[in-house]
Image 1 (spheres, rainbow, N blue to C red):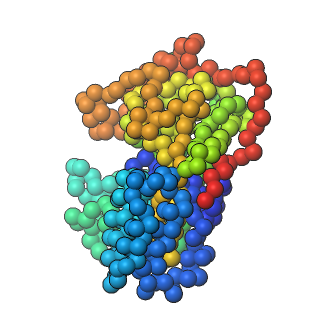
Image 2 (tube, rainbow, N blue to C red):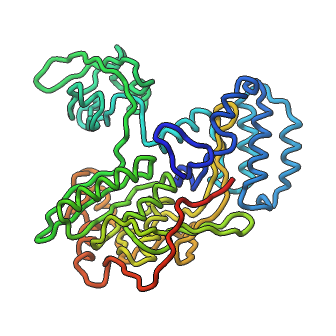
Length: 445
């Protein structure tokens, strides 16, 4: 279930997202098929309606369809005449709502494009992070991403974006500015920038495809110990490669232990969570799935761990899905101590399909369980050391992001304390050998 950085194989991509999506596969109605028939079906909204119905009929995890007469719903859907795609989309959404599953959902073409762009871990643009500065109320560059056109052109943190291709940004929302800045790789864009000590100037750039950093790491000297601090924001297609680089770099600096921060991580690609789990554990089950007919599958560690040092994982209520798979694997196998708040509680597997007109549908096809067989759906994972931040602490960290992952961050401080104990987060050594997994979770459509 590998995913190319630039293409999605319809049967190979699995993703997990907290509030975004559950575990998913991209479908038999994949991009190549869709392109070949899209022109013929663009003016036939009913064809897309029936396509969605058939996919749900074949794959949905609940064969009783939430006690709904799914065949009667099809007859009702196809008996109507749809005068527009939007009308058909509304009918599809209404039909899927009857399943009572918020994670089985229809996406219009823009929503589907947003999802696939997010999970690819790439954007087509100039490579900056920006914000509306609270004090100046001006659109301001936070960071120019490594190897991006912006960084190469000399864009700096603190630069104010006065105009984008001649359009003034005064009172412009960050989202609207992002839409103007993003575009097809190879196309030109001109920013007017204001920089302290300089008059406003125009900067011409060429958009490119940029790998979005989802892993950030640093070496911290905590007393006599060297701690590798890694924050993983989401499980994108590039997350496992970025995690691998982070671990190897920190190992080369002889760290004594690791803190893996999954707070606020809503999930992402399922395979990324499995690959990353294998970087931390040599043996043991990572995740179990059960489909609509009761068939189960397991993904296991395969003796390819990169890090043997003690490990602490920090989670919170927004650590979901792929984050919970990774946390559950490390916790159940006693490879890490888990610190923080109860996690989100998302344990559903979905298939994601591109449809003939560029829209998409996500369908729950299975449940997943932690290695010990625990169903965390609607419950979440309980940390080994439970520590909820107070509202005041949350406000302080939100107002001062530089405090996150420091001793002024109570959950990080608790993780450090746990690493110093003898009973937590020690590398696991099993006396019994296990047969390594053959690879990716075999979720079939």
